[in-house]
Figure 1 (cartoon, rainbow, N blue to C red):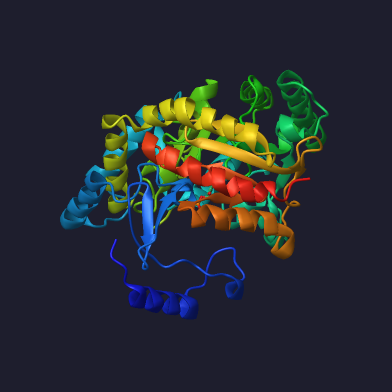
Figure 2 (tube, rainbow, N blue to C red; figure 1 turned 30 degrees about the vertical axis):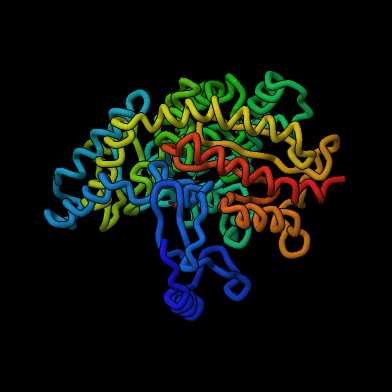
Length: 449
Ligand code: PLP
């Protein structure tokens, strides 16, 4: 990349003057001006290059600027840039077919949205209308999106400011052995006690008032906690027994991230509704959706579904999805995530954990890994307190700054860093990124006791 600092300065100045950024105190942020990106890398206007260990917001599963997907978007733009959702359009039909062929079980009908949050909104609406019930259960330590119902479902501090109306959401604890709410010492205990806790929550809420249980198959932003064997099957059984709709949110975990097309495949579980977005077209054009079971689709067979969006199944977004899914199949991207996750990432992270006292736990699968950073391995006290900001968050800020100095853009959330590069990352890129993390972890180590 050629440096163009004067262009970067103008981009930055207009951003600071006019762009209002998500989730931020506007005067306290300093966004990097990005000049370009390709594959697993992006670069700024000074010509400094970063290896993107975040895949954007965990969505560029095929990396930046894949030439086949860019060409497909260009062709669709030349042919039919946009068309209203009530018509049958080739790109939309083909995207729905390719998605439905990959979703588990009988999730064969696809309702397209503009992203993940609105997919969650619509899944909840479908569940309420299907069951005639109002309440929705979701987990603490979750993220389901920034719109009203989706943020109510979310189990992290981003919910708090918008929780003036809870919209019928009740939160419960999902399994997470490292920080067990159930005093469990084994995955079996954690699983059994988490299911018992969910069952009790439903009993006390009134089973006939609960429309849906919404879970990320593997919670993403909240920390990549792989559910213990039997947990999701247990939730499925509870839902069946009480006539509750089981919604799996695969917005982050879906489309190759876990080394399978969907994380549900890892657990052999079939939900009634499944939300997706991000990896469906690597975010090249905004797209999300809900995959719908036969029974729920039938509810809206003769009765209209009361919901829609101007851009539902936008041709540009759908053409990008068709090209992305075909590229993933042709280039073995899902298999790459599984193979390099197991052969390169996992052993490297375990080796880092052996040398860095700040690593409390390594967990993940595919290209979906978390390092839980702690002050003290014995007590498991997090490296920074829950929802820390400013000075209290200094150890994580210092860790992230060190990673960037070493050319790796790290994913950081609370006391964790996630290793979530594109699913088609190469072995050499992974080794380069892991070496940068190694150096940054030495900075985190300085804050341990
Ligand atoms: N659900 C999950 C599991 C997510 O990770 C996200 C975004 O990170 C969302 C929903 C919301 O998606 P979007 O930001 O596209 O609205």
